Length: 374
Image (cartoon, rainbow, N blue to C red):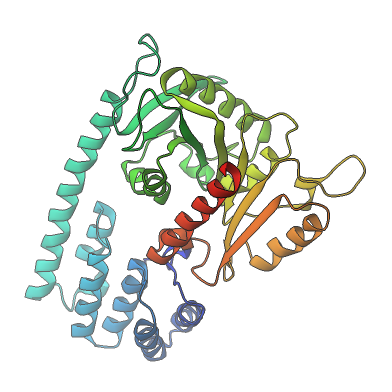
């Protein structure tokens, strides 16, 4: 049984590669394992930005086809990308019956030992980060605009009886006596089954923080889990307003260069924010988000866009398709030039997590800042 799924955020940067991954998935369902093996081999020759779960599925198929050396080779490549970096995945590789043919292989044992060592190191680094985000927090009782530490700080607000956490990321170039550009970033959706307000240490690796450091921007990163999450605009708007008021007391924010946007579901609600008549934000942005024509409705029935919005999207996004985005964009664009749309050829819904996608996203933000602040 193939227990590790092909995740959309791990998919390819090239259209042909994604098609091959889809084909391999179909062949696996049909139990055409030899065909799937050939498909994986062909795909891996085409693609530089492979995902760890691509290797996870491929190595299982290699084992089913009796290609143990190839399976171990692919496992090793997957581990380099982070495969087996948690207890659940390690347990899978240790205990699932599919691996009984190699469980005593010396190379396989060394890879498992490497996984265990990486997990222990990850726990140590996570603990250090969790301590830092608490110690970096600025007390509300202290003077405003003190010299905040570079990195992350954790805060909470109470919204309708819920303690909602949010991170503030301070770039290396921040100066307490200089007003600084600020980005609100609304993360992608999380299922209701995961509706706990916990701060995952892996959040620190989100690409938005590297972008913020490169552009000397503060990032405000609120957490919303499950329902209502970002689906309820009124709830979302109240949370943003409360957080912004708090952050202004602690950090020297340039109130003329504040932006709000997000990824996927977090980007969806950003289209609604852009329609507010009165807003503290200079402009809005979306990454891999899905607009609805209703987001742009006006009293006279003609689509309107009240404030500038900047969007970036992959043309091969299979979750929120580029064609659906273009249908809305073309209707709105006829009436206003306030919407700037940039695209990347490939990378899927999670293109911004790929090395080439991170570069494109950084260029996208720099373009937005240049247009708005020139």
